[in-house]
Length: 436
Picture 1 (cartoon, rainbow, N blue to C red):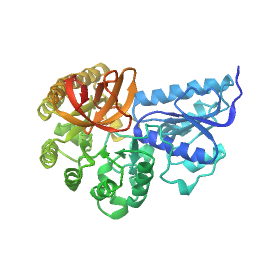
Picture 2 (picture 1 turned 135 degrees about the vertical axis):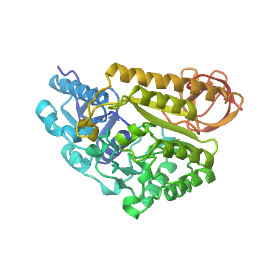
Picture 3 (picture 1 turned 180 degrees about the vertical axis):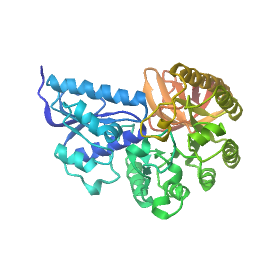
Picture 4 (picture 1 turned 45 degrees about the vertical axis):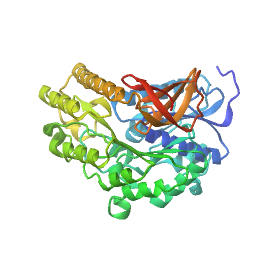
């Protein structure tokens, strides 16, 4: 039973999944705010009449989280705690027909490309003049910065093209204007994201222009770091590394999901590369940009992955010594090419293999961090919790990478500022430091 009066023009937005979804939620909230709506994000919706759930449909765990969240707010609607529940995003794009049948309590479902229609449903007009503007959910000193949408790659395990469509780049001029607006509002770090940043520019300019984009963004006054995520290894434009080496505000950091190293697995995954080419690319990146931090993502338990394939991955991880690494347990997704294969690695074995890779990486990370003790790094101060300041070096992205901890009882730092900090101790995933 409702106990509080709900505000008709107040919208509560829930974001699930990756940084690309977060960016989309920020755009939605910017449009709603311009339409005179009151907007809140990821809080308890005590008086919001409308809840918009931006869903993820990438892997099984993410889909289940999205479904559970929808059901929770559908129940809140039955109890009169909210008036409307609206679902958008990847899960809705992929399974709209089924969801409409199974969740009649939901007022409307929208896909990943339905923003104008969603706004119209809520009673707001889509404002073209606001393209590139949004309501940040991150601390203002860093912002996720989407440079393209969709993906044309044929990876067998990935459902992203089903949910996001083909690759579409945003023109360089639009992105520079967005960066300038963010910089004037206090943003110091741009986290470049896309489903496939390697292909940036192919659709608009007939060639890859990621390097040109980085140069243009690095010229924006006030931007201290530009960080590149989600680069595809096949066709990676090596001129990007020249920009990274030459421009001080282009972070020596590259997030490049490689997924596997066994030739047999890479062929089945339709990655368009081989073990030899992968190792040569990693070597070329490190030669061109000495000291670069490489982050990658791997898949454990892909159909047909043998014990030998897994051991080959472990050997490669140990030899390559990635600075940052994450592992997904393979998820058998309908509509993908790999769905035709037998999902023959048991769930327990997928988990065991993923844990083995992460245990190996944990030791590598500790060794790499311990080598930083006594050295001084430029650190961006993100937040203060209790008696501790938390920041990041040039080699770390928010939420997924290492943090630098500083004792707030002894030292004062300003949030959103860069500070030179000397590392005094290290653990597997964190550094402790003090002002240099």
